[in-house]
Amino acid sequence: MAQGRSAPSSNRTLPMSVANMTFMVDKLGEDCAPLQFVRELTQNAIESILKSPGKKGELRWDVAWNHQTLTGQTKLAVIDNGVGMTGEEMVEYINKLSSSMHEQSRHGNFGVGAKISALPRNPEGLVYLSWKDGVGYIIHLWRDPENNEYGLKRMKHPDGREEYWGYIDDTLKPEPIKENGTMVILLGKEEKENTMTAPAGTPMPSRWILRYLNTRYFRFPSGVLAKSREGWEKGQSDRHSFLREVTGQKPWLDQNSQAKGNVDLTTAKAHWWILKESVDDDSGHYAGGGHIAALYQDELYELVGARAGVARLQGFGVIFGCNRVAMYLEPKTDAGVSVTANIARTNLLCDGEPLPWSDWAAEFRDNLPQPISDLMEEISAKSSPSDHRAAIRDRLKRLRELFHFSRYRPAQNGQHLIDDDSLTPGGTPKQKDTGGGGGGGGGGRGGRAGDVYALFLATRGGVSAEEVNSPVEPERKWVTVAEGTRTKGDLEDRAARFLPDQNLLLINGDFRVFTDMTDRWAKKYVQVPGARPAIEQVVREWFEQQLVETVMGAMALRQSGRWTLDELKRLWDEESLTAAVLPRYHVDFAINRGLGSKLGTLKEQTV
Image (cartoon, rainbow, N blue to C red; front, side, top):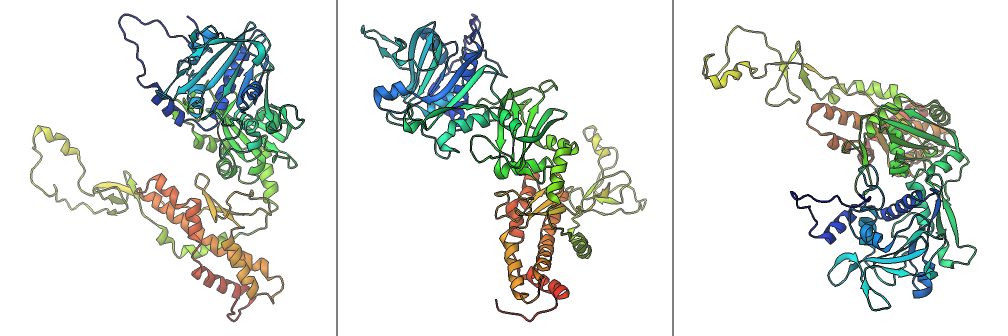
């Protein structure tokens, strides 16, 4: 049976079909990321090259220059010099939703990617030009504007015949195709659309394909050379219009790192790099430091950078120096876990479930590589000391009961009884047995047979329980850009971030609420030499206490059992912690008293 073809049906079963293919393609296409079509067409080109006898070749993302010469329109094209296809093969493989010339599997090619990701974005069509053994063929897959259906456009031949594929001569053959290869031209949403233009919101629009492929692929297979056009708007012959090699992230990370390694986790391998301090990651060709992704079959999934990347790396224990660290988690396929991508190839699934990022993070923290620990200690050493824990802890002792949202759990010898109306805060001291026998209500032990299990029900409030401890005071660190403990852009105009898995509070020393308050009191004490550092420490102490109280209060609610984890996360997310420090009247009053004891009292001044 040819690869990609359906198995013959038996007389016992009528094969399932799709009633509304256009609806199906459009719905599946909605799940695809905007640039997913670039990955799908690139992967098809790679697999075509690897099927060639030498398993070597080149793929290019370029302007369809011959199309531009003939029509004056600028269209994006992907070209490979792989095995190529005949006209009949293109009709078979391209015009069926789940069909592919490559081997289909749950863990490999699905046969739907290029169609669902590219067709809805190119209703004018995808033109396939393919050469096999020196003979050229063409098909045009499009969305027919008359019946709104996807399919092959009928072509009129010079002899008057109309077919769904045709022969073409070598006039349209692009480099690097010689005897075999394929070119796919993306026509866009309308005839005059310039499909070389980056979709709206795409990073690095002048080199968007290069950037996307470098951050989508970990590395390309040996023997496959990938290139992407830059400066296309200047024309093919201009020296500023050229093809740049696409390598994927691994070669760049290896070349620009001062340390690298991996950590063997239970269900994954964590690959990490520490970038050199001098590395230039502003070119836009690659994802620089401060990003994390999943790695599978040499492709990167769920890559996050900037604020999201820093937050996830901090969850892995990389608190300082995130902007110099990159990390990829590669699920182990030999750990009894089935790993596959979703149909849109936007996410990886382990046994059908999302990736266990939290589990990986906890295990990585317990096995933090020494070079990463050394990096954090080096950066942390540059920060100014500011330990307010003793003073804050002493003040909170007087309010301990206010953070004590009691909760009880069943325990054989507990000193409390659970309120059986709901397993909630409540609970009353256990009463001594008075020997009074059965409880209220009628009926004795001789109930009906159907009520026999009622004999084993506990009486109201009769379950022994013990009290759950109060929340633990979080650790905290002040971070700033100047000291290198905060990456520019991370926590921008936010007060703090709480990492619950580490019970760690990161407080943004650059937040304007804190700096404005420091400025306010520095002006009042302008006559006191060297007052500003002392003022900054007092300001930080009182705002730190507000944040600590907010987190401890939220953690106390967590113990009550009436708040879901998602609801609690909203209590300690960055926006909520920022809101917690916005009221300033009482903080200002406390700062006034604190500075009075340190720097001497001042008469109130109008600032």
